Amino acid sequence: MLPRHVVDVLMAMERICSGSRATDAAAAQRTGPRGSGLRSARVQAAAPGGPAHSGEGQSPERQSIMYMMGDLGNLMWGHLDEIDAPGLAYCIWCWARLSWHPDPQLLSEVARRFATPASLDALRPAELARGIWGLSALGALGAAELARLAPRVRELASELDEQQLLAVSRALEAATAPGEGAGGAGAADVAALVAELSARAEQLRSAGV
Image 1 (tube, rainbow, N blue to C red):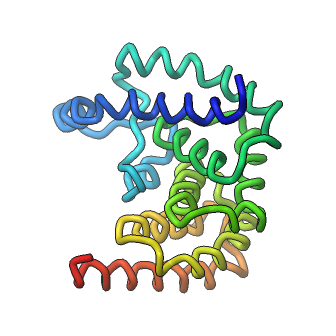
Image 2: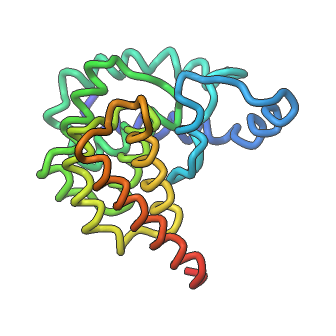
């Protein structure tokens, strides 16, 4: 299986699980909120493409997909050098949407590669937004990644739509929340960026864009 097909398979898995989103939402309303493998506050935030799915009440299709995720992760380890920046963004996004945590070392390496200057320069605004949201949802948006991502987010902020702006601002805010390990000297800069993104989103909302 070629590396690009790994990304295609992950995206196909996400689409299959998304097909039961309405059913899952209706069940959640009947039974009340439940926990999942991700920090719920992060996953429930506005996200490019919608929220991630809970790991409970899985359909047969989703159960089959979960069994395959470990094998895909193992396959990725040998081909990371062949997955481009957009591919990394979609992998991160699909993992978060599927509420699936990869091996911590794999996630850390993918996060590091995603946040390199070369990768960031190759990303379109929507891909950047998806990757940032996914990393935050997976708890992998650390101080090192934030320091590299923030300048690029500022550069591309004017090209993000309202939903993307909200997703990124909430992801950044969650990553720098007390106890999340991404605070420190750069937290004030990130807080200022969050305010800028939120203000931009409000401008677009008011303008009806």
